[in-house]
Amino acid sequence: MIPCLFNLGMGEMIVILLVVLLLFGAKRIPELARSLGRGVSQFKQGMNSPLDDVPESKSERSDRDS
Image 1 (cartoon, rainbow, N blue to C red):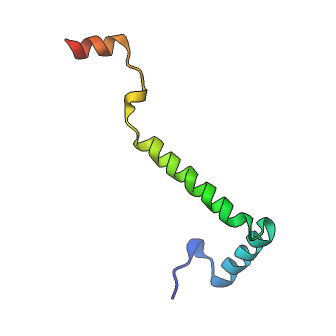
Image 2: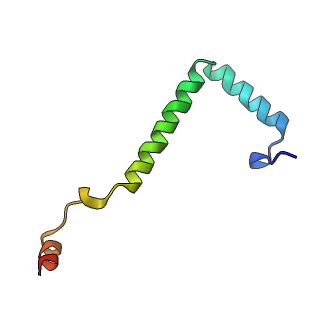
Image 3: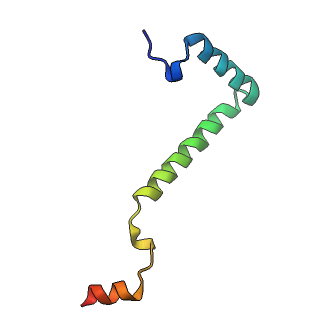
């Protein structure tokens, strides 16, 4: 048995996929998936980037130098 996402059966998933295909068209779906993947990768890069971009206050620098 195939595990179902959000408790949907195979028939419901096929109907949803057909509706998406009709709304966006076969040419547009790969473009949407590609842009979604780029957005997710940029979000991950932003979350993993070092905090060097955040400026330090003067008190933090003087505490660290002492």
